[in-house]
Image (cartoon, rainbow, N blue to C red; front, side, top):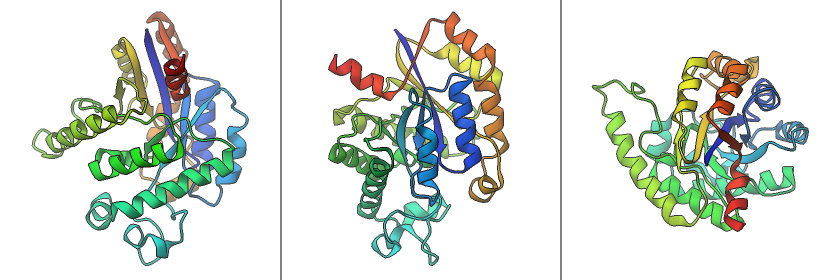
Length: 276
């Protein structure tokens, strides 16, 4: 079987992003999304999700955008003087206490359940924070604590060639980290896809990724959305979201899925198959 989970990250980041993700599901090939629940408008966004009952909905664990769910005084290593998360990954990883991250992520799971009335299909992390082994361990513990059956896995090779300049140490260092975190997830007993594909794409890039889907289950990580003023204030990833939205809703994408015999699925299908 060639199974493909097409996950749209960042639902709830802004109304425009959320609208774009729903379009990518209704009009395109997106099967799954991950919800950011730490924003004041999260209840409104949860209402939008109820209009898409066939869309798998997981939780996008966040430590870098907006404010924490917990009072800032309870997670001082995660916030600045204004009580909000900082956007710098380097600063976060340098000063963060993993135990505080785990408590905040637990609170985010509880917020998700309160909003949606059920646990998430799976956990993943905003800005790929799970590539850092202490945070990967925290994610695994949170999933087990709350009975979340599945998580994202980011194996080496998840990002396309050319993502990092050849002179940069970032690529080799990330490869080492991803080998460690992949091993942690495989040993955890949690469900996860066999492989993942990430990175920016346009329509030709999407078709190339679809051609790479092999036997087993692959997750395609995507970021579709409509650009709005709120997004501009929160994220540097802006116009690329509309490029991905156009690709994911292109008839050519669905035609390629059908031509290659790919079964579209979401994370809930992983655990259903394991039970069955």
